[in-house]
Image 1 (tube, helix red, strand yellow):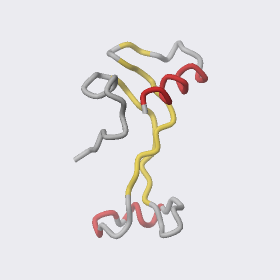
Image 2 (cartoon, helix red, strand yellow):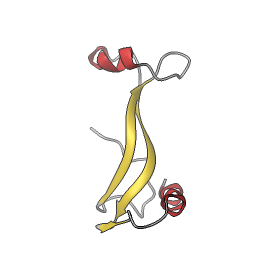
Image 3 (cartoon, helix red, strand yellow):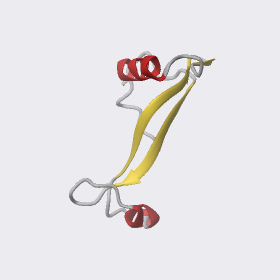
Image 4 (cartoon, one colour):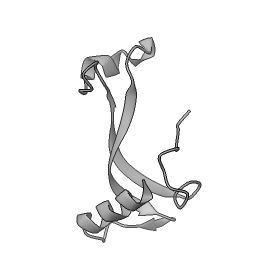
Length: 77
């Protein structure tokens, strides 16, 4: 189950594409590849760090500058 609780209502339920990375965090909050490989133990939180908004509302944003896409992403979160 994926939680979209951090998304603004403007993105919830709309089509789009996010670019990011899934990581498992150690006790200090640092990414750990080893913990990610062993995610089934459930001992460490797994989070998705989003760093780019590639499409929104069914429209590609790839022609937009990265700075603009990041502004749009920040507004959507």
